[in-house]
Length: 158
Image: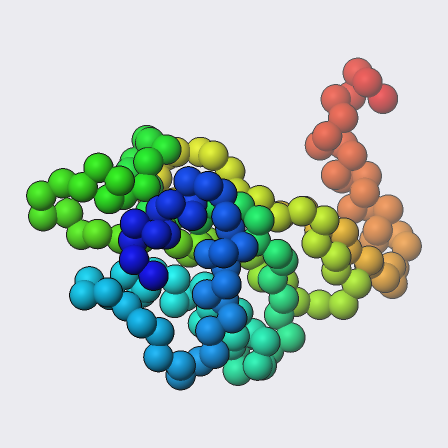
């Protein structure tokens, strides 16, 4: 997909359209323009297809991506690199390079988002999970909870 089309979809917040590249099967030829603009989306669909087919990170999962691409930004800015093209600057289409995967039973992802911190050329991603835990030793659990509580609640509030 040409860079201009990618940027237009981002501007109109059409993540689903961009994420359709996630459905491209491994080994399938993906048309690219002369500058190979499709390259930045390859990690997105490669990872998802590899996960789905059990060829890497067997059993790991990823939540639904409902946020804008996380890379590559101009530092300390909300502009993707290439929006204001400069002489000699490598052209990169925005992409989802920052991801959260999880593994295990009894884990439910409650939310998945990106932060708007502009300190780097990436936007960090975060997630909240609900995790079922089996308690094998009640005394150890109580010690851990007391330790955590002591660190969170000032003594004068007890």
